[in-house]
Length: 160
Image 1 (spheres, helix red, strand yellow):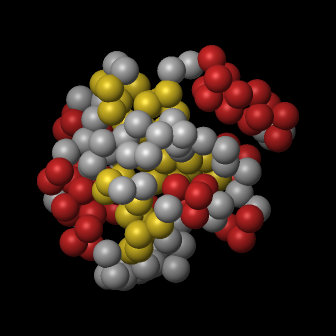
Image 2 (cartoon, rainbow, N blue to C red):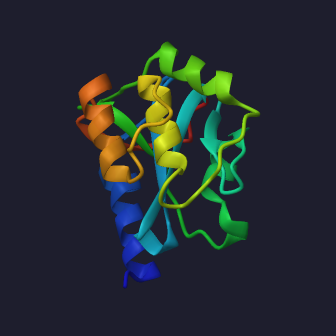
Image 3 (cartoon, one colour):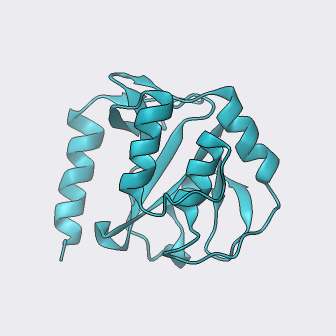
């Protein structure tokens, strides 16, 4: 089991030692949940806003702070990771538009079979009934569709 100490060390390295990035519209973003054993994903739509599928099945717009402070404050996430190609954020206006168009809609949320990763992948491809129910699958779709080859920490000190 991962400890809070090991998560803090990873976050410190990711935020202080490694390069950070500012997302572009349509960037895929994710954060850790459950001490790093699960993740939560969404789409950056600009103006410091993320569209995501929450655990109740509602697709909503949230701030980065709300994105990482899910689960009633029991989420230890400290960083949001952004899809990148080398040092530049990846994403498209089309992905952001698909995400915005889904705001206010509901899905039959299931942590394994219909979750945030499937929603996020749907924003990339337009196919919301895809099988990308795990982060590694979503990352593969991001690699193939928007040339993502790295995941860098969002530098939230910048207004984007």
